[in-house]
Image (cartoon, rainbow over all chains, first blue to last red; front, side):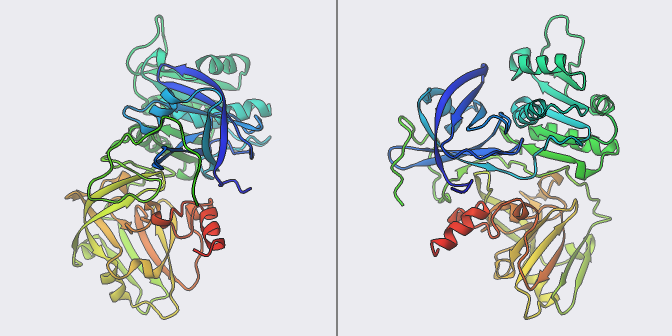
Length: 246
Length: 213
């Protein structure tokens, strides 16, 4: 079966990540290894034949065989995310196809250079697949995740990220809170800007490979400011999604 | 092929678009989402140029003032992105590819076009899909100069194909005898990208070819 045929996945577990974000663990009858950063498309079919499909990034690493984890943000009025949140429980089946996307991907190799990941909100999901892949591969290239969230409640994967950062001196987690921050917080409390990115680049080391994922305004700011700091455009890969701007 | 599977309790939530037909697997959006693989190139119109070359009788190259002096058309088109959104009734002003091709004169053996863009993006299309009023170089969107994140100062617009074929930051159209994959096409996306046949990925092309479609 080719990677892009529709297949019926079974939901084997559900994990609430934040009040608005849930992880769906799907067992796939025809699992193929994805590349960290790729996505799957989920297709819902109504009894009357009406269909809707959306693409979701895979959060799990390719080392996690026979299943994928899709971490989904509930979108206001979201036709597909709304059903996934309300109507789907363990044991249910979902039609999916993938893995899809060959550009916003990162490979953990022994020669991997410095890595700078920049996320806004649920834009952290494909970057989490890269971090989990890196962790499972046991490589120690200098890696920085600069992650912008509104409030402490909105940090997806907080415990796992904090654990990774504590256990691995070559991985730095930089959080910035744009609405309100935890008590006694001494870190960033503003939107991602040039100064913040300059510090992240410094921590990652010379000429990092950059992946930026989040809302358009964040991606635009981060990508142009990294370019202004001398990082060549070919080293900056972007993905935008979520409630779209104009 | 009948699909016997359905999701219990799932039903249409968004109203069906009125007066418009959505291609399969698409939903309607009122926004204008932005998708691109890398940083947005910022091209000053003073430094901008656009070329039409390859298999043509008279290769053409215009600077910003020359290009804007060409006859403009007002266009209202529906656009369909491979990431499942469609947007109805977008309004543009631009220069028809028919105008440009008439000046360059395609050679008989020209069958395909590679679009080359500022920032290095490329995408491939059949020449026939750029003629007969089917494509234009868009300069104004919604009455205003096209914003950089949407492909400004100028983007190719080919509304009857998935929108990745409507290359942003267009710099050059090269006429070719043979088809060759562009940026997303090399990454596994469809060589043609017909939204009505749901040709999203290369596998869709092959499946449809195998089924004789």
